[in-house]
Length: 147
Image 1 (cartoon, rainbow, N blue to C red):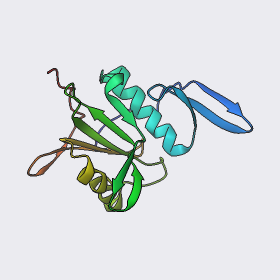
Image 2: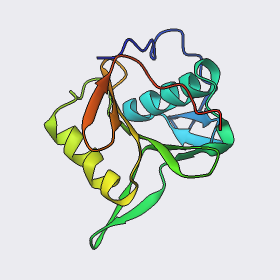
Image 3: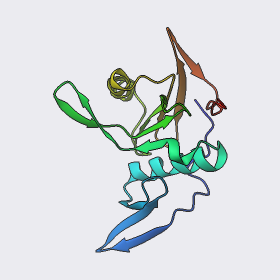
Image 4: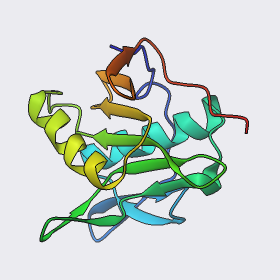
């Protein structure tokens, strides 16, 4: 499990409209309804950009992909400088445990967007893996590649 201080000290730009709390998404550059899962997604985005220095212009959030005949949406993909998918992220709300089913969901996305790194997080518990012929679970997030 990774020691990610995601939910502590996070200051999101928020507002309320029609009794719905919204947060400013720094990647999508728009107001998003602040659900518990969205809070985790926003915490990860801020952490990636501010702490890990992943380039904001190479991060995609909630894009649609096809899985068989189904339309799915992944949470986050970070691309390398050659614009190849580098890190695939699956977010859950803080009260939702990271289980085998969470991994299966990420594997569905990975079948369409192969990435060398995975991250599963509910903001309280996070697991990162390096993926090649085998899956190697890591103790920290990878450094962004320089080339």
